[in-house]
Every structure is written in structure tokens, then in C-alpha cells.
Image (tube, rainbow, N blue to C red; front, side):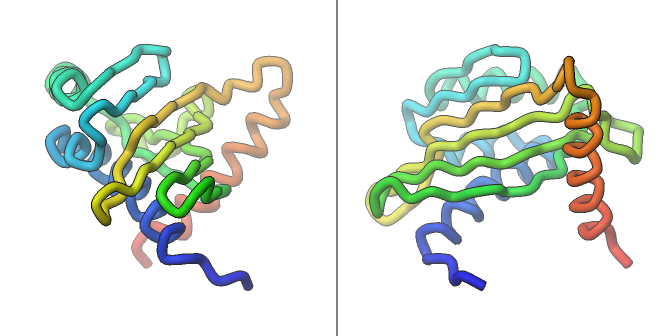
Length: 156
């Protein structure tokens, strides 16, 4: 098995922390992982630009909605330079009050991370729907893969 670089591990950790803070509904900690001019593109196409707007919008989302819990699988971390990386992942969401991933809100996620002054942070995070409208078999395959990840992360 190929050994991951410390840069790649740091980028993976950044992504995982971002989603874990979402799962804990902690806007402040999510924002702390972002660069000052970061851009977030939501599942619905909404855009948040800069820490202040990201913080405000996330706090609003968490106060108005019972948000679901992410389950994810990182597919690739590609180092563009020693200080810039792209992470690609697939994610599913378990709606609040439920125990199963809802296939209608599966997503492909892309994150651009930048290292500055020794610290990795998020420059861009994009959450794209993975509806597979004309290919239900792909939606089912995608969901099955995420359910497998979910089952491995459940306590024994």
C-alpha cells in the first residue's frame, strides 16, 4: 500500500475535521479551518465568501434547521504543489432523526486546501449533488458505498 505524505494526511485531516464540526453543528470551528477569503458552495448552489459571511450563514443554518450528519469517503488527495492540494470525496447525509443515508442528498465534494505559515486551511469547499437522475443504478452503487463506510464507523 502506498504511503501517504504528511501533506496529504494534513489535507485529509482538514476535510474530516470540517465535516465533523458540521456534524457537531459548530460554525465557529468550521470557520476556523477556512482561509480569510475562503469560498463555500452549498448543495443548493448557495455561496458563502469570506470568514464573516461563512460564519453568519452557518450559524443561521444551524439555528433554523435540524441538520443531518455526514458520512464520507475520500477518493483522492492530489498535491498540486507542496502548499496547494485538491481533495475529492463522496458524501451522504443521514437526516436528523433518521438512521439511514438519504440517497436523494448524496454529494460529490471538492476541497482546495492551501498551506500558509505552516498551517493547512480551506480555500474552496464545493458540495455538488450526486442525483444521477438518469442512472438510478449509479445512485444505488454510490449509496451502497457510503453505507459500507457508515457501517464501519459505527461502534461495535
